Length: 126
Image 1 (cartoon, helix red, strand yellow):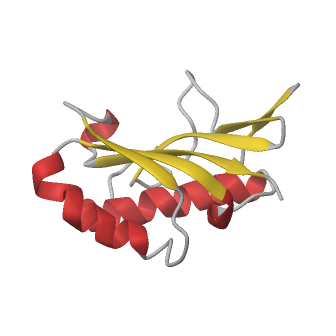
Image 2 (cartoon, helix red, strand yellow):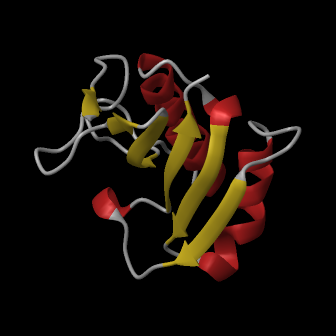
């Protein structure tokens, strides 16, 4: 059985997907880019966009009864791996000071809204 997660505190999803789904005690959060609720990208490049994406994911996870500390797997997508990988990691690690989750980071041609980064995750519900 699955449950749709939707919170007005986070960036609204597009009609093609939900903010997250819960199934078997895990939260499957859709990809989040660093933007506000009006879909305006966070200015300043990769670090502010990474922080905003993770803050949005945090709101979605909390609505599901979880949190960033319960992420078991994250996937990050970068539109410019060579330029942004190190800086993205610096901002990412601000949120995961101990025991960061398993993670994949993939370079892609483009991300919605022209964002530099998109992050999705799977988290446990404690």
